[in-house]
Image 1 (cartoon, rainbow, N blue to C red):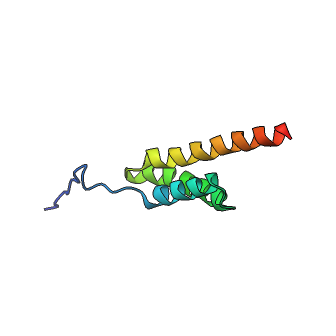
Image 2 (cartoon, helix red, strand yellow; image 1 turned 90 degrees about the vertical axis):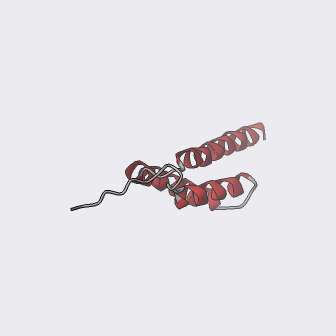
Length: 82
């Protein structure tokens, strides 16, 4: 007889790539070079993994992408001003 194991919502963990992607995107926002590119890649990979594994962290991955989008807009405006 096969035993089925059902995970509680408390036992579902956050996706590690989503957390790392968010941290790297925040570092890029404050001027750390090249961390944003890695953060974008990790956040996108995390979104695909979360869809497959049903882990938590979708909001973190999306937040990282939004932070970089905001930075891109701000830097574009600054460059356009000069």
